[in-house]
Amino acid sequence: MAQITQTEIAEAAKKFMDGATIKELKGITNDEMEAVYSLAFNYYRTGRYDEAEKLFNFLALFDHLNAKFWIGVGAVRQVKKDFSGAVQAYGYASFLDLNNPRPQLHAAECFLAMGDKRNAASSLEALDAYCPKDTEVGREYRAKAAELRKLIGEEAFAELAKDDEKTA
Image 1 (cartoon, rainbow, N blue to C red):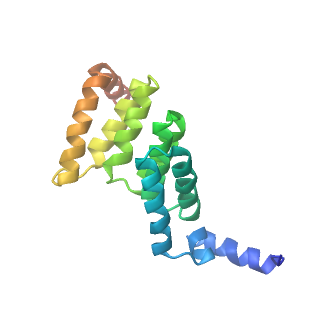
Image 2: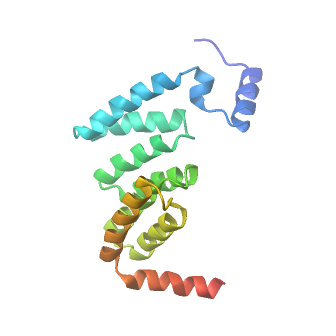
């Protein structure tokens, strides 16, 4: 096995600092990543969650800037009832793509499953703030959020409003 030199480590560190991903450092193509994603998604769809989780984790590690991969990690964790882990993955995906309502909606579902209505409400408030209003996806997710809002209950949203007033 070839030994890595200090110069190579320094060069890799500089590339990371400049925004590179492991995928780029290893020369993995987007097509190759998409092939792995397709396999992971098929595993997920067919209930092979452990296999799907391994592949989504690989994808998120090798291209940590791709929100789609983090949503995959979150989805597997959510279906495996690791709601806290799912929320972490969805939070990162949301950070990478604020206008994508999917991670915000699913984070709200996870918070609700954990009995945390306040954070579920906060996730839906984020969805409302950032989700595009005049797109098909925006309308679809706003409708799903409205249904979830009923399950959460208005008390949680009132608490958020009170907290906002205190900090304003």
